[in-house]
Length: 86
Image (cartoon, rainbow, N blue to C red; front, side, top):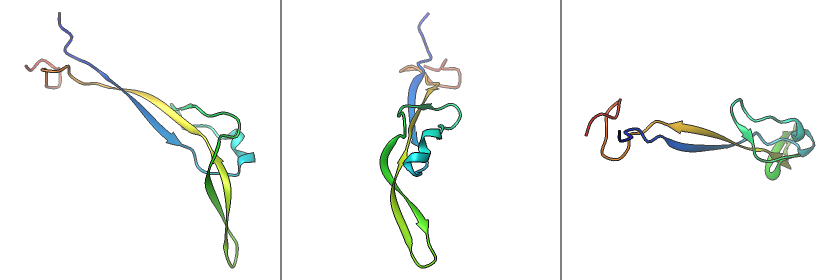
C-alpha cells in the first residue's frame, strides 16, 4: 500500500506586540503557539508614547512564538481531495 498522502509540516512564526521590557516577562504567546524566547524576550523593537506635543519612542521587547502545523498534501503523482487521482 503506497502512501498517497504526504502531509507537510509548516512552522508558523510570529512576534508578540512591542512593550516595555520590564512588562514583557508576563507576555504570553497566542493560544496554540510556543514561546521560543524567555525572560523579557528580545529587545528588537520600538514602542511609542504619545505626549500632547510630541511622540516619544523607546526600545521595547517582544517574544518570538512558533506553531507547528500539518498541512495535508498529496504525495507526488497523486491529486484530488482524497489523493486517489493519478
